[in-house]
Image (cartoon, rainbow, N blue to C red):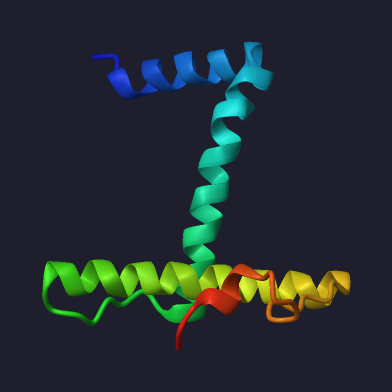
Length: 99
């Protein structure tokens, strides 16, 4: 009977995890954060990219990322009771923007 390579690799990986959990979790945690963020973006704005050209697809994806970040900021602002007034003073960098 031939031994499968997959089970050997899995055992080595599991043993590494069991003996080095702190180091393993240091690498895994950022990866899980990224996966969770992409999952939330897909849930909120759909998985579909509807643009046809590569440039338009890139721009559409970047817009989704910006929109997601804004929704998280607004949610946290209300959740934590933080009041933000960006246009309140003459020294604000936003007063220099010409609309």
